[in-house]
Length: 232
Image (cartoon, rainbow, N blue to C red; front, top):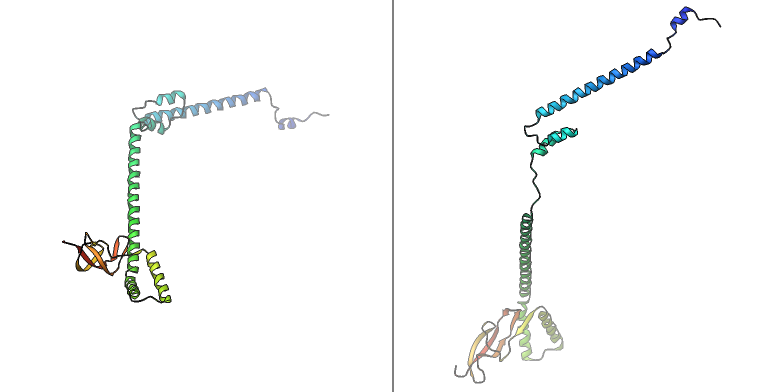
C-alpha cells in the first residue's frame, strides 16, 4: 500500500486523544459549578425577600427555616390566628336543652292543632246531620199521628219502619214518655193540668209531640202537658 498524500492527511480530522477528554471534563465541571452558584443565589434572595415581607411577630417561623421546609404565607396566618377550640360540656348541654325545648313546644302545638281539627271535624259532622234530619222530624210526627188514629196498612207500615231505622242509625234519638220528670232543657210545657198526688216533682202527664235530639243537641223539645205534686 502507498502512503497518503499530505493533502489527504491535512483533510482528515485529528484522532481524539487524552487532551480532548480533559477539556470535556473541565467544561462539565465549570457548568455544574455555575448552575449551583446561580440556583443558590436565587434561593437566598427569595428567602431574604420573604423574611423582609413577614410581620414583626414571626414566632414559629424559625422551625420552618431550620428544618429547611418552604415558607408559605399561610404559615404566618395560621400562627397569627388563635385556635377557636372545641365547645365545652356546659355549652353542649345548653344547646341540647334548647333543642329539646323547641321539639317539645312543636309537639305541643301539633297536639293542640290535631285536637282542634278533630273537634271541628266532629262539629261539622253534627251540623250536617242536624241540617239533614231536622226537616224529617215533621214527617215522623205525621207517622205518629197516623198510628194514633188507626193501624197502618202493610205497605205504609214498612216504609215508616224503614224511615225510623234510617234516622235512628244516623243519630236521631226520639224521647219523651208519660211519667218523665219535666226538664225545661228537654221539654216544652204546653199547659199545667193540675196536681197529682202520685208524683213528687213536676211530671210529664201527656206527650203532645215527641222530642228528638242528636247526641246532647236537642233538635226539637218534646211538647208536653204536665202535672204538679199535690200541695205545691
